[in-house]
Each structure stands twice: as C-alpha cells, then as structure tokens.
Amino acid sequence: MTAPIVEILPDKAALVQHALQRVLNVIHRAIAEHGFCTLALAGGSTPQPLYQGLAEKKLPWEKLYIFWGDERYVPVHHPSSNAGMAKQAWLDRVPIPAAQIFITPTDEGDPHQSAQQYEKTLRSVFGPLQGLSPDEVPQFDLILLGMGDDGHTASLFPYTDTLAVRDRLVTVGSKDREPRITFTVSLINRSRSVMFLAAGANKQTALQQVFSPDGDDQAYPSRLVHPIGELYWLLDAEAVGNLELPTAARL
Ligand code: 6PG
Image (cartoon, rainbow, N blue to C red):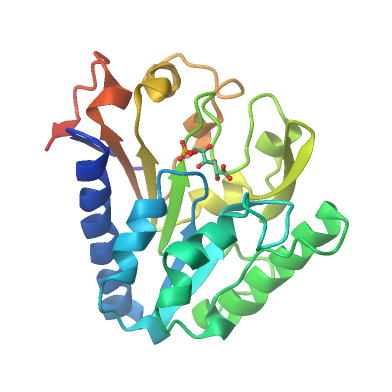
C-alpha cells in the first residue's frame, strides 16, 4: 500500500485540466506496457468536464476498455445515468469500439441480478485480457472515483453492508432507497491506479475525516480505498480549506 499522491489545484477548472493530464499519462503508460487500457469511470458532476476534455484528445481509442465504478438503477437515457452522462460528454464523440464499452445493466428489474451480470461481464473481459483464473480479481489500469459530501465513493455509502463485501466484484448499494450497482472495495483496491477527484467547500468535512489518522471507515467509506497501485487525490483549494495535508503538493 503506497502513500497517496495528493495534489491541490487552485480551482475546479485547474483540477480538471490537471486530472486530464494525469489520466492521459495513465492511458499512454498502460498501452505502452500491455497494449490496452482498462478504465472505470466515476459518476456525479465533477468528472463531466474531464470527460469532455478527453473527447478532444487523439488517442488509440480501439485500445480502451470502459466500465463504470457505479451506476444508478436507471436506463442509460435517464438524466441521472452515469453512463448517459459519460456517453454524452465523451464516449459518443470518439470511436471507441462499442463492444469495448460495458454499460452497467440496469434493465433486469432486479439490481442483484444486474450486479451478478456485470460481474460476469468483468470476468469475461478481464479473463482473456489478463489471463486471469476464474477466481482472480480483475486489475484495472485506472479507476476514477468521486467523493460525496458524506465521504461515500462509488455507491459505497456510510454504514451499509456494501462496505464489508469482499467476495464479489460488484454489489448493490442504495441511496435514498434507490438501488445502485457498485464496484466493491475489493475490486477497487486491486487497481493499478485509483484517482479521486473532489472539488468544492462541501467536501471539506469529509476530506478532513478521510485524511484523519483516527477517522471512522464506516462513517467515511472513501477511507477504505487503498489500492495496491497508485492512489491519487486531486483536490481543489476549496475542498481542502485549511486542512493540513503535509504531503500534499500545491500546483
Ligand atoms: C454517483 C457517483 C458518486 C459521486 C460522488 C461525488 O453515482 O453519484 O459515483 O460516488 O462520485 O457523489 O459526486 P460529485 O462529483 O457530483 O460531487
């Protein structure tokens, strides 16, 4: 478990631009190292301009494999859909082969069934790509994450059973009694790189708790993210406030 790389940008626009460079570096490195890049996208609002920035870039799109770290249990054309947001901002604007974009199934009518289906899809893609045995945990090149004001990430919400799921890749969370499909901590922590993007003063309290040596993992689930690879926290100054982050770089 390596120490997180914490980078503080003056504002959200600078954060997005810096994140774009960091994501491009990871994509190019992955393709150089093993010929493809597996990426799991975050939902919410923060990453949308990042996805718009990626749509303007020239990349070997046929080498990208796209998943989602979590999804609301709505159709892709629903305004709350994380996949719908990323398609509109980025994926519908670049020639990534449709067969390499794995939208979370949300049309089975049963979130548990959908979670199992997505897990099967993950294994069917990563097995051949990484030569995994059936019980090995897939390893993403990059998982993008946001953090809610309450310290949740993906759809791993405080004090929920989802936090303890370690024997699966995908599980079912819920927010305001609405089901969510989410990667588990086990899958996230297997990743070669995990990148949090957090902006805005409303993140300050959760950030203080996440970086506190004696914070509560159940109360602030983002604390559970410790990938075997790199962990980036890309923050804007508003999210940090007067929090002391001794190892952080102000860029
Ligand atoms: C979702 C996200 C969620 C999000 C955080 C931060 O489906 O909403 O996956 O985990 O990343 O809530 O959201 P913002 O970027 O809008 O602050």
